[in-house]
Structures are given as structure tokens and as C-alpha cells.
Figure (spheres, helix red, strand yellow):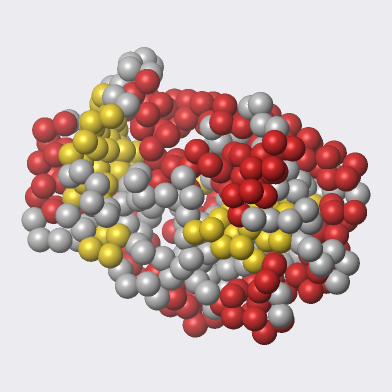
Length: 401
């Protein structure tokens, strides 16, 4: 089977969407399928590249200015003169049996959707980001964009199936895009769990202390790009309640810095000394860093449980999250067992949960182990990849390769 994978975000760019589409593409190729990746150019990456059995073509692109509308994120688009014809030629030459698209508001999804509609080729569209914001004016703009741009385009290109990765996405897809249940596939995100075997907490903690010159106090990892929907402000707001009991606590913020309000708030509260901002780090470093921390805290605004939280749990670290227990459709979270759950914006409860994990090593160990088992039971990446592949086979009308 010939599969085209389409995403404006793709390595060497880092991020959850890029990671997922790359992992899926490699899995499809490993299973014997011919795979073409179409993505946007990014920071000097080769325009054409072949690796891991996949061919990657990067289209000329431009980057949206980092504003609140762009999540203060460097979002790359390929809407440039001649790109549509180039995309059409690529797909006409490749002749895919099916296209797996990522991102409902990306221009490459729209361009390949137009090609698929004209050639009657089935498509599977995975949504990774909801057009929502904690800032009311921006949220209002997003709703208008969804209603006047994204929804009409999706109605025209009409993806054959749409993947809802969790309960909230399922609700969002039905409400914003008016899709019926029979066009929605429920497939969660996954984690490459082989990266999280044989991690030694004590050894990794020692490495962290030396690398970042951290003392002997509690260490909170906070993994993921700092953007408005994961802005770390709630964590900073909770820090006075943590530092009052454990003044030597440090917070290691790992990821690109696209939104700086948390730093301003830390200065206002006098807790900036507790923050260590590393910037984005190599993927290979993440398992060890997570294993060396005492806990991981970053999903605090009610906008979803990201891959970073799943990776922290896979590393055996307890997590604190502001999410609903039924966030994932087939894997309910048990508050106090798999993770500690708090309400978004409840800084006192967040501080209390962090302090509980610091003060009760037995509880921290139990939550870390239960969370690890929960991830290993439900989010094994090869199984998630295979679930996607089976949907693609069904769309292409094939039972085998």
C-alpha cells in the first residue's frame, strides 16, 4: 500500500504532532508500505530526504509571526506560489492509496485534501490542536476562524475519517465541525515505551544535579513548550505554597519558550530563583531527565493531557494534572492512584498536591508506579500505530499490504 503522510510539523522540528506523524510514518514503512511524507521546510532541513524507509519532501514555507493568535508559537505554512502544483505533481507521481493528514487548520492538509477530492482518494485526518485559548478575545477569534474558515474547508475537502485522540477532541469535533459518529475514529496518542525501560532514578538524579547545578531539594520537572495553553502560570502561582514548606524546591522547565507570562509572574511573587529554564532539549535526553525528577507538572489549564505527561508517567514519576478522569476514551484515570488531579486554577490544591508527593515518598512511589503501569497498559506506540494502519487499510479497501 502507498501511504502519504502530511503534516506542516515534522522533524527536525520538535513537538507532539511532529513526533506522532514521524513515528506513524516509520511504522507504516516498517510494515512494508511505501511512504511519502509531505511537510513544510524548517530551519535548513533538506528539501528532499530519505530515511527509515520513508521519503520526505519539504515544501517552501513561511512562518507566522509569534503572536497570541499563533499560540506565541512559530507555526510554519506552505501557502506559497507554485506549491499547490508541486503538491499535486508529487501525489500524482506517488499515486497514494490513502493519505494520513495531521492538523485541521494546516494548508498542506487543505492542499492534499483538494487533490484527494479530485482523485477520489480516501483520507484520514488526525487533529492535534483545538482552536481554543485561555484568553477570551483570542478564543473568540478562534471560534470565528473555526466557523468561517476551517469548518467550510473541511466540509468541502471532506476527509473520509477524522481521528479523535481523546474525549475532549471527540466532543470538539462534533460541536465545531458537525461530524457524525460514523466518520470519527477514536484512537489515542501513544508513547515509544522502549525509551523508558531500565531507568535508574538515583543515577539520573545525580546526573541532573551535576548538569544543572541543582541542590539536594525536591525537583519538579515541567516538560513541554511554554505556550498560552501550557503557560506554567498556575505552577508559578502554586510555588509560594510549596516553597513555604520546602524552600529548596526547584522547577526544571524543559521546552521552547514561546510565552513569558510565567516568568513575569514569578518575579512578582519572588519565586524566580526556583525556576530553571533549559529550553528545548534533544529527545534522547528526556527519559533520563524525567526519571531524575521527583514529579512532573505542566498540564494545568484543562486543555488536555499531552505526550509529555504520558512520558513522565512512563518514566515512573508521579504527576499532578488539572484534567478530568475520563479524558482518554478507553483509559480512565484514577485520582490519587494513577495521578493527582486538581481543578484548573486552584493554586492552593496544586500546592497541596505537590507537597503531598514531596512529604510522602511512599505515596509518590505508588502513584509513579501506578501511572507507569497505566501508560504501559494503554499507550504502547506500536499498538497505536497499528490501530491507525488498520483504519488506513480499511479506507483503502485493502486487507493486507
